[in-house]
Amino acid sequence: MSESIKVIMGTELPVTLDERKAECKPLVLIVDDDPIHHKLMELLADRLGITVHMVSSCGQALEALSMFSFDLILMDYRMPVVDGCMCAQQIRAMKEIQDEIPIVAVTAHVVQGSREECL
Image 1 (cartoon, rainbow, N blue to C red):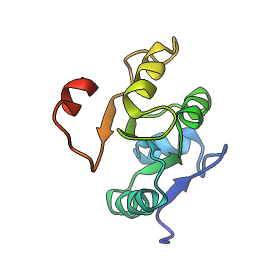
Image 2 (image 1 turned 45 degrees about the vertical axis):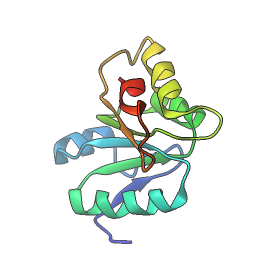
Image 3 (image 1 turned 30 degrees about the vertical axis):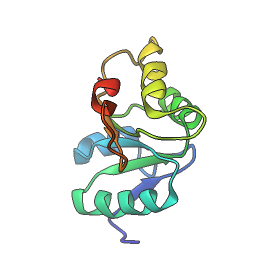
């Protein structure tokens, strides 16, 4: 992994929020249960110069949102237990989050009606 990449997994940021803001690097929450997609996101983060925090479930996403302030959420549409649409609804129900953070659905499984379901 490149030294310039900043990927977080766990409860600590590799840089303070003030340092991240000074560097103008957005903090993106990636919610995806597939470890291969995590690796792909690491590579993309390196290319884009962003800081990413990767989690594998909705529960982990809700926990991360209670600890950090994110600029964007990339959410897998199809996950076990709680899917991306239901997780997005739970995030929107959090009073401290509301509609401030954009949530982008990400999927490799395109089926009729999935776009409408997410919107």
